[in-house]
Image 1 (cartoon, rainbow, N blue to C red):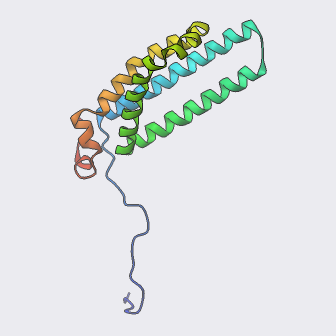
Image 2 (image 1 turned 90 degrees about the vertical axis):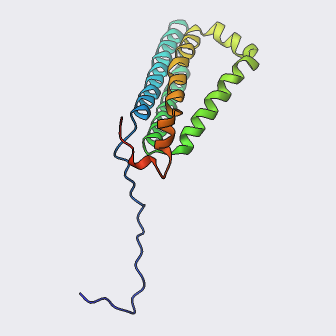
Image 3 (image 1 turned 45 degrees about the vertical axis):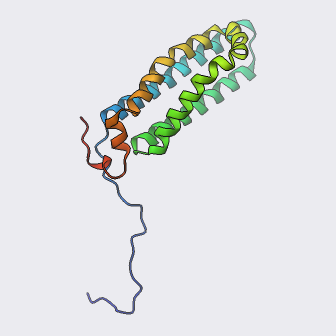
Amino acid sequence: METNPYSPPRAPVADISSDRTMVNRDVLIACKLFWLMFGLTLAGTVFEVLRQLAIAPMIGNLIVATMRIVVAFAFTWWTVSKLKLGRNWMRLLLTISTVLGYLCVPIFWKFYLPIYARNPIMAGVNVLQIIPSVWAIVLLNLPRSRSWFSPTTGRKLSVA
């Protein structure tokens, strides 16, 4: 077929396809740890609802618990999907927010103490989530993970 010299130039309009089929092993482990933290949140919420139903059955508690689970699932799914796509801004956002969150605990301890005293299940879940949270942040910030998130070198790295 002949090309028409009077036709406008062609340009690709789709997203640039990236070669992200090879996912870094540390990033995959970190994503699994984020799903583990969601599971801990789910278990803590279910136990808390059961505890509250034993005290006084209220529909409002079930609605709040359901909303908490839906928001936690959506946030976890969004986080994991962006990490698997190699979005460096998500790695930085998670790192900064986790560090700032743990630094704020001593500052706001007087606020947390009565809440945890009334709700020991939530306190236990939050303490259990510290280990996978810190582990995931460390995995995301290892040199091989940081280089995988780099747009210039990360696309060609292998799983190992």
